[in-house]
Structure formats: structure tokens, C-alpha cells
Length: 296
Image (cartoon, rainbow, N blue to C red; front, side, top):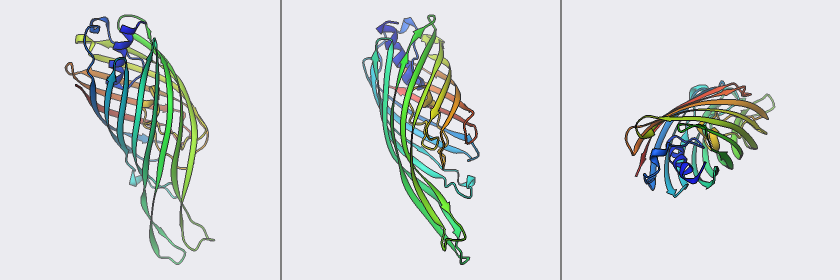
């Protein structure tokens, strides 16, 4: 697939957040907008940890067939999902990412950092009095992905990818026991490496090929599932916002994702997305989101 087709892939990839998305040939002569702003929101539920609503805002600068993007996001705690040990947290993130066109390949990378505010806990001490415990922590990570773009027809495209991510996250748990005069809120720094691979099948249609439907299948493996924060992941897994867990273990699981991107006009598009884990250790989760993107 030549540079013209890849040029069009980059536009749609920014529209729907998937790697390796292409546009049809009649878009060749249209100039790609220099900037784009997008807002997205949704929730992740399941895994026995309640709902985790999220919202994000991003600004993208297109540089020919390449791009640079900065985004901010927040994942909220579900205070109704408290357990005896795990402490939910509101997580705020800043992410800087970019993509580089290499012929039929796309190299993408990101770095992220943020903070976590743990939900205050009212716990009972040994003397039968109650105290309020609160704490905070941090989150950071980085990763890269490589995607190959293959045109199956004028409107159908296949994009296999591989990715690797590293994350470090602070988790918290309440520690009680007969040997403790007072309960403790124990912060733990956990880190892990996650590898993933899969493929996205995309179909473009509608006036000026503004609309897109995509299906992604992925396999992931990690050294610590507590550190996995798929809101930071690159490649197709960037569509999943995973539950931020407490005590992590190594894990291997699958994910399937469905995406629809619909161009309301030449500049404004609406995207819906659903992701389901398959065989996640803490219990399978589902992420549903939607958003608007304006190019200018």
C-alpha cells in the first residue's frame, strides 16, 4: 500500500482511535486538517469492582502522514464497590503520544503520568472508635506499537499489530488484624510489562467514505494485571479502559472490540466503541464509550 493510501489511513485513525484505518481513493486530493480536538467518555464495568466512569480530552497536530497528540483523562472510583481490602481511586492522567509513517507500517509510542486519589475509608480501631483514612498515589507508563496496513479491497482493510507497554501504579489496601492497635492504609507500588498482538478489520462506506466499522481481536499477556491501564496502551488495545485493580498477578487474556465512526460532515465525526475482555483474572470487564471529534 503506497504513501497516498497510508496518508488517508492516518486521517481515519485519528477519527476513531484505531491503528491502520484507511480511506478510499476519492479522498486523495483532499487536504488533511492540521489540528483535531476530541472528547470521549464512557464507563468500564465488571470484574467485581463496580463501574469506573471515564472522560478524556485530546488535541492532535497532524504533520503530513505523522501526528503528535496530547490528552488528559480521568477514571473515577466507584465508591459503592468497596471491598474489605481494595481501595478505589480516582485517577487523573496526562499522555503525550505520536505516530510515524514508515511505508505500509505505522510506529506509535506514548508516555504518560498522573496521580491517584484513594477513596477515604471509615474503619474501626481496636478500641471500637472509628477513624477516617485517606491517601494518594501515582501512575506512570510508556509503550510502543507497530502496525502493518493491508488493503484487501477499495473499502476493506486489515491491520495486524504488536505492542509492548510498561506501567507503574500505586494501589492501596486497608490492613486490619488482632495484632494491630490501629488499621493501616498500605500503599503499594506495583509495576509490570504487558505484551499484546492482534488485528483490526475495517470497512469504510457512506458519502465520501466518512463512515467506518471496525472489529478488533487481541491477545494480551502481562507480568502484573494490577499495572495494566489500557487507557494508556497503544495499538488496538488503546480502545479499552481496564479496571484498575488492587493486588495484581500475571495474566493472559483476550479482547474483542467493535467500533463505529460516523462522519456528520467533513470536519465533525461521532464514534462509539465497545470492548470486552475474555478470561481476565479478576473477572471479565466491558468498556463502552462514545465521543466527538472536530478537525480544523
